[in-house]
Image (cartoon, rainbow, N blue to C red):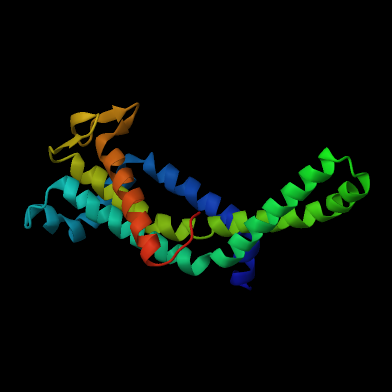
Length: 203
């Protein structure tokens, strides 16, 4: 059985299936607890021995996942090919719009024949962007489970601009807790720096 071929053909569906599995795992308390406890063996010393503030620890973890995600994307996505594909799509759309405005039926018919090939190429590029998600979730989800596990045992606050001071597990925006907002802010910021350093194109 050629697993590489199967992954190439069904990667988007396998990735969606894995993402659904991770979302389901998030809803299972005992599973979150078990994974969090196992991860605690590696991360607990940063809290108990080095006394690193939890909001600082989140910065480090978001940087770790940002680095891991960027490296995975760098070696699973052909950014040069993706950029070329996007440029061809822009050129096609501009040409097609111009033909419609000028009511050039001959040119429109010619571009219609080209449309399926361009759309197929765009679909392939979109599928390629989903490929690294499964690898990224393998690391990110256990880290999230550990954060949930630890935050249920300690009391830690953070002060954020415009949002004020909140306990990290406290919901701040709708049902989104303070720690997750802080994690996302740090992750987005650090990922941009990492991607620039590794010369990785944007998604």
